[in-house]
Image 1 (cartoon, rainbow, N blue to C red):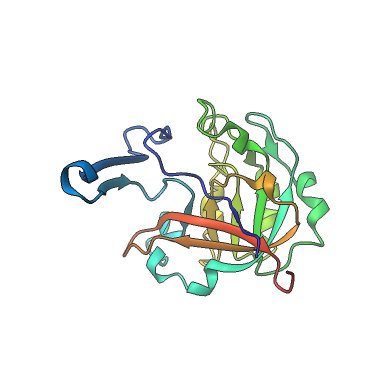
Image 2: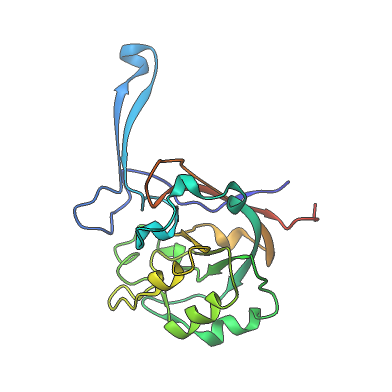
Length: 218
């Protein structure tokens, strides 16, 4: 099976997009030189790396990450390529329409804007492409299992429209972002594997995310 890792790295070198919040910080506890073994203390947020998120992010009655049914972590996905988006360029309904017949209920939609080319650049978070409300509503009407993409924000970073609250209204749809390496994926239909840390009582957690061939293909 050919698998492609599409999860962003956890690293002290990654710039945080939330002022005052640590993205990732690692500190050696034991070293091979001094102790004969190596171990590190990690400080991360639930929004570090590529993260899997539930409605608990915006709703107190939603399930936490440890309560997500395990079958939600593996399943069919469709790569929706909207072309190379420029800084602060919206994802529109016309970008999504070519995939109308490809997207099925229960899919994970994986939106590729090619924005990961700006990974960890100064404008990566502040000038991210984003969904128009019309485009996002069109996606939600497809009864998706998960909405994923290679962008860090689905709302306009400079004028949030509340799209994330809409995503989590039914409690059945999850979020996965931001992704990298989507340019390596050549198929439209894939199988998505997303494995978040099992942390009790929080809204989300960093995840290792892979794509492979669609079910039934070698």
